[in-house]
Image (cartoon, rainbow, N blue to C red; front, side, top):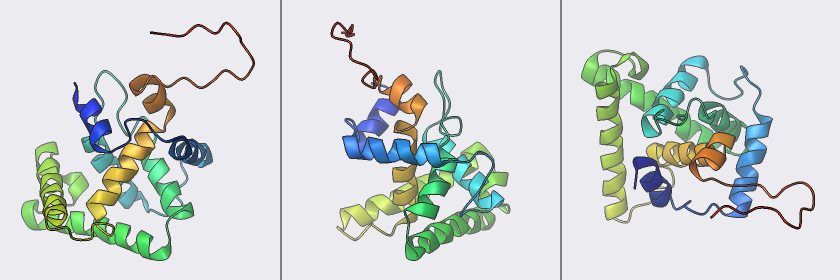
Amino acid sequence: MNRREVLLLLAGTAALPDRLLAVGRAVHKRVRVGTLRTLNPHQNETVATIAELIIPKTDTAGAREAGVPAFIDVMLAEWADDEQRQTFTAGLANVDERSRASFGKDFIGGTPPQQTEILEDLDYELARLRDTKSDTSKNFFQSIKWLTLTGYYTSEVGATTEQHFRIVPGRYEPCYPLEQ
């Protein structure tokens, strides 16, 4: 089992529910390339960097190439309420604060090992919250992980290349070939 399969299983989206897939596909269709609706360019680049560290490019597309940053921007603009947007952008600011405190530069200016260290700290804090049965619904790192995984696995590349999802043909084909 490779890293992406583990991420997919851990995210609880191994078999994406039809509604989640439908919502994700609809959000991807609403993306306007080059247009930010909620995030500023710095925040968007921070989101893109975090998403790419969660799902990096390997022999298949990474989160950036799958359009995850734009997906997250649309989700924040159209699906999140003001409090959720505020929590998310405050989380992004906190990532920069942590990076400046540890390495003297914003998160996106850090090296990949420095960026990974910050994300590992955030993940450790999230795990501690889960262990103590604390409410994690307002945790930034949980939000960005969920949005990244959902955005990736509902994108065309995530659904077709990673999950081998086949959309039913748009016409009736009684002898449609099935893959084993």
